Picture 1 (cartoon, rainbow, N blue to C red):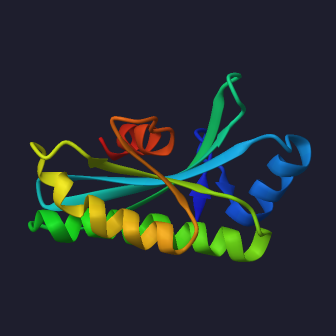
Picture 2 (cartoon, rainbow, N blue to C red):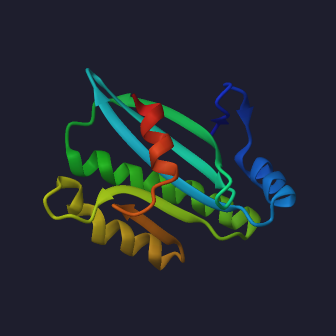
Length: 148
């Protein structure tokens, strides 16, 4: 996966994260993916966000488009797969704690609620802390911004 900073410069997420941790050992790392279907395309954005306590967030983003995915479950499940995939690669290479932000709502009135148990269960079984709406969403907020 090719990640970019907000200026559009290509970044290797492993070496970049390693440098951030060396400079800021207290940083928390969040990974999240969001998607948006517009016209004939479904756009995904995966973000690695570096949270510096109460002093701000910096992130890098990977965007990819597919032909429109009409099935909601399929589109949202791919968000989980993409987030866990990059988190696993980072954890394997860097042996760090990563939180996964998922853009699903724990409120049963929302359609995305159908994925909460399966997605959280999978991520928790791999050792990740999972953040879902309405709780803090660091990475998925940035991902949402880049999907539009």
